[in-house]
Length: 172
Image (cartoon, rainbow, N blue to C red; front, side, top):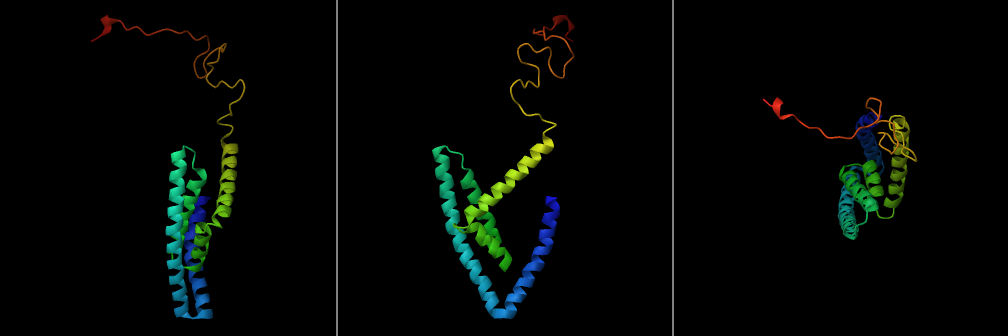
């Protein structure tokens, strides 16, 4: 499903960008459209540089404190993706790039992405659940608990502990 979405995005996005650029060009003129695209790129580059440094510093500070940098990693990833979108010419990609990069919109985007990822993990767990039963009280997949009759995956009967002794006479 994700592959289909990616293929459609790479096919539809350039067409949408060209359409929007043409529409904006008809309203404000061709040269003004080019100037606006250049201004967006310059402003986006400056913001990405500033927010990238800020995200990097926050990530380093969190790592030095020995805390898991979940929010900081998400922010750094969003700044990176937003920077790529801002460098791609077009108004639609610039819109999403600014959403990912600006410090007052990034937390909302991060929350949406975390909620989406959480849903995907829950769906994956329900699909994989029958293959990997969850652990809990009394869960002993290998039969190693005291009083277990035998090991899972081995022939029935009690487990006999011992050591292997090789006979020296059988060496070549």
